[in-house]
Length: 202
Image (cartoon, rainbow, N blue to C red):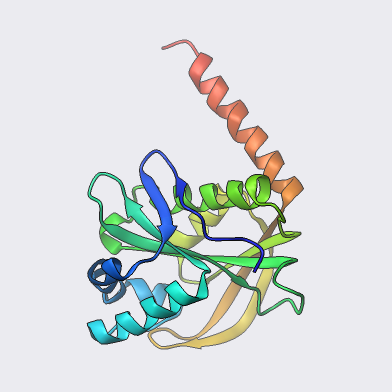
């Protein structure tokens, strides 16, 4: 893979490669009954299961640990993987996925982390991909809001796409973003921030 998992920072988060010390934090959020099923995987049953998956993250070099700066705890993951829907090399198209501890939902952390990874991939990486895709299942409105806030373009719905452990047969909503679209999104966000900063108080 041409995109190395380097440490990245946001105002509230540190994105970094996973390490063995993260096992307990990883098990804590991955065993929650609502976290895994929303992303299509079964909650971890025990810490041994989490250890195996953590080892695969460390060896695979495709997943960031999302560390909350104030607490020092790992509260989620962001990964860049091959897009299994598009039959092209993963150096051309990548898909992004993310998971966040249920205790941290509603704080804007997922949007903050995904935006930072997009900036890294499209403006800092030596060999950026042509496109980044992302998807969510039809019931996952939290993920849908993150995707829209980050500026991804809606592609369509793959109906009856997958059977999930907790939800049965579900539709999958598909989105994507090119480097040009990302830059347009950044320009709009900066203009909005500037407008908010210069608006007189009422």
